[in-house]
Length: 212
Image (cartoon, rainbow, N blue to C red):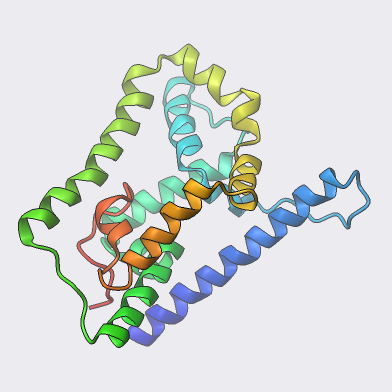
């Protein structure tokens, strides 16, 4: 079962990298003025837009219809929630690309250092609260602070329409600060088990992602 899980997890990771390459080529076609080969936009790239998905979820609740701006983002979010509720750690352990890379890093760290560091219990419990605070902030901001008009306006805004392109540009032209934060999390993931998933990811409600 462990080998099957790893095979599926890495399969999803490679597939998501493929989606990223396809989306890059799709954007490059338009930015090149049509001189580059055309590639169809992959709908699966919307799985990386959880904020847009939450906005669409509220608008769906308000209007009774799914808007046509990043509709796949909402479908992916609902699938993730459903899988997590019924299969607990399945999303984190079998599907999430960040979890898969984090697992590789802590296993490499165990080989390098002979063991993984376990934070003091009190510090570990306190830090775990960060992801719940982040989740509460997003839920409050979207489902409580924003009214129906604000939701509809934002969902239909130019900013939201190109949220996927903005995400691509974030990584293509990553700032020194963002790069330093990502590098810090990568280095921290060697001695510690999945620090991003444990302490920062609002989608992760699991204890660990070690496959055990």
